[in-house]
Image (cartoon, rainbow, N blue to C red; front, side, top):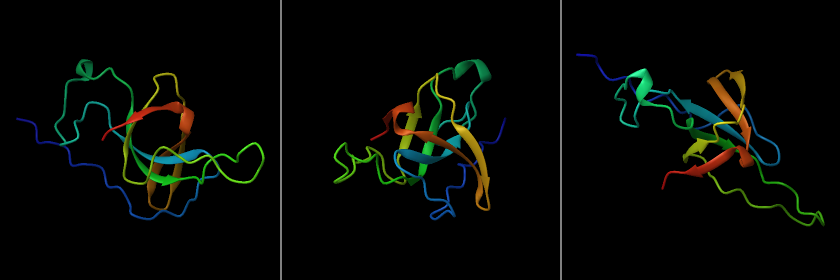
Length: 109
């Protein structure tokens, strides 16, 4: 019997603040459920899931008077589009992904 993998560590604060509509994510490894149960490789072919770690302030409005609010918040679990190509970065707190709001297809409620 295989022991379940622990849920990835998601830091409460990171040394990175995204700009505009970018989001810093902690990826959830493919083949692992929310509870940490490992699935066979061929069982998980859906979109990439990730935890939101940091969120930019939103894209500026056309008139520059404000910003378009972001649809996600720190702590949300989101799904990325299959065609998205998030950038990988290393910070003191670990390895993360950076992507834009438009590369997310939804969040878990």
